[in-house]
Length: 432
Ligand code: FA5
Ligand code: MG
Image (cartoon, rainbow, N blue to C red; front, side):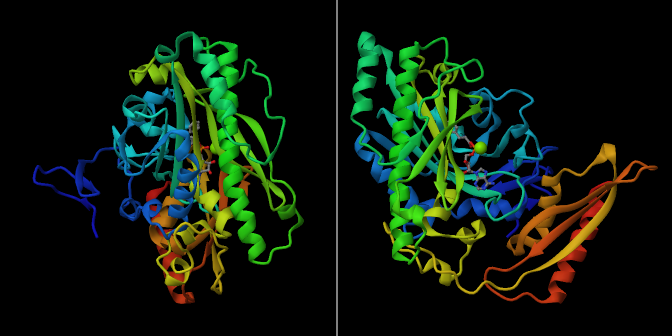
């Protein structure tokens, strides 16, 4: 299916995403392979791990006054994705190497936070959840894919409504959150210059909202991880960690539109995993949305990373598989452990090239070339060697591309053809 037409009736190149035509320009870098993923909507499929996880979290929060929004379109403006959230002009997230642009002013959202402003404006309950597909030009490996899903959550309180009772109301709401049953080390590190409270909020308000945010996320994580461990025990795992309380810790973080900001990490199979970014929403964002009298918090969870743990899925590409051996394993509202079917053998090819130090190839641009040719047959790409010639000062880089299919055996001939195409595409697209 072709999305990019070279000529439209007006004579200018256009690009079609989800049935809508957009003019292209110097910013356009959205390949058909990615544009085609916008119609998949994995989060809305009741028997898909991403859909099961979404409804698991939604049902846990429904009683606490959250509205769910699940069908915002992925095409948003640069204003919604960046400006409304106070991203500085030179933030790396805005760059063409990191983001899929349809044109200079239009892109595929890089996070669900792109809809925060609209939801703060229109949502009628104190909280909301947004689940959606998001897109980023990124490295290729087991836990990174250029399309993935996030769930945004936010909760606000109105000064107009609560007046002098505001802190008391937040305190009561905080006390009504059920205990998560997980053990949190150092839950409330003090505020400081690097991660400050906002001048528009008192110390007490900031502290209470921060605690409400953390307790809510701990509740969600406890809910998800308890199901994950039950499924793992049922599937026969005897890992001793599965039989002691779940452990979490809070790390300070930075996001342009929240302050203070944090990330929660959960201990799982011998390592700390980053699960979710969050923070106290900046006054500028709320007032920009026309609700400057409100204060509150927001979080964003990566659903694939969470689903990999919950369902024991070893490779993020599997979520996009249309293979019945994958899809038939999952049932609505049920957490079960994925039973791997035989992994087909992979193979690798290396490619090395010289470049001028001043004209290095951005790794995400290289990834995009490899992906546009190899598609889901590319398991990962890594830089395995680098060398600067002492006299010419030219740099030599060697990348290793691992090819592996989720559903069939590959032949050497087909991989040689793909690799030849990668090499010739690299040498025509870059000054190497
Ligand atoms: C965000 O996207 C923020 N919007 C989260 C947020 C919301 C902060 C509201 C504050 C308030 P971050 O870029 O860290 O943050 O991504 C969030 C999660 O998305 C990560 O923890 C990770 O689980 C997931 N993620 C990021 N990149 C990828 C990728 N390429 N593939 C799969 N998952 C990814
Ligand atoms: Mg992060």
